[in-house]
Length: 343
Ligand code: TLP
Image (cartoon, rainbow, N blue to C red; front, side, top):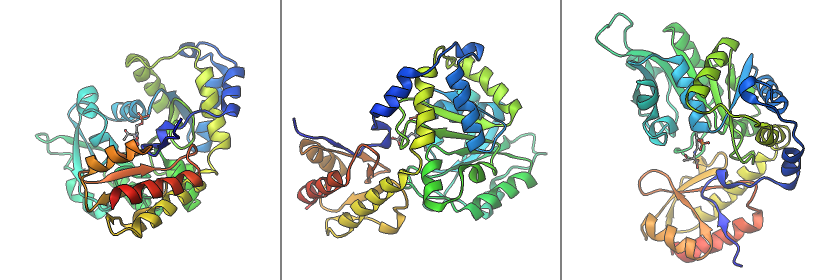
């Protein structure tokens, strides 16, 4: 059977033997009663890693972000975020549908906005005829911008601005682990500038299911209630929590290897005339590029025929994501397929 190289996303990773063993051996209980020892251990471990009072295991990154926004806002509030934020582009309109909030979009550059750009968007609290600005949301690393890292000094300045206006801050840290290994800024340091954080176990860390949200105790108590209300209260989840715990304990440092693979592929692409790519923008495990001679759709179809799966970014852009289930040899094979298809 022809080998398929799947660079559509880091969500496609499959649990390893060791992870499956941890899942098999997990002690379980009913988590709706808070009696699943493995889920409890995962939440305690994650809270410590993120430097927060408490954490909650949730089924997905989308649910994590949406629960956080729901707890931090009231219907009619406004959340400031970057125009390509996952909560705006890829969460099915849920801020409006589930929490009755509207998003105020900032242009940003490479997924990053500065405090100066958002200060004019903060609505005066006295303006009863306007939505209330309530939350500033940051995504780090930024998916649609190509895995870019938000500099810690910028995050600190955004957090100061939020405090000045009495606003909450939320971090979509689906890939905060990637930012952390690349910059050596700890996940806890990143999280310290936010009231709530959502981070994925099922992307580069290789767990099959799940995300973590973290915040103070009161926040997590409220989040526990919203998770149940939205049908996310699960029972013997130790089986999947064990995978998450294994992922957090074992799979963070190896993410640097995924970044090396992405940078290598970016270098190969930059050497081809038929491709536009900003090689400097490839900071972590995501790379975005545009074909010069064919349409995105043509390239996706032809690559698939040859055993290489890719996805799309914004209009006219192809996305490739490296992860633990692709090797350096796969990157070489991907380069050869791309050379044939793009030229
Ligand atoms: N991103 C997916 C797709 O939805 C695009 C991917 O393949 O990258 N925040 C960020 C920054 C994400 O990239 C994602 C998933 C999520 C949240 C949602 O996570 P899940 O898929 O677990 O709900």
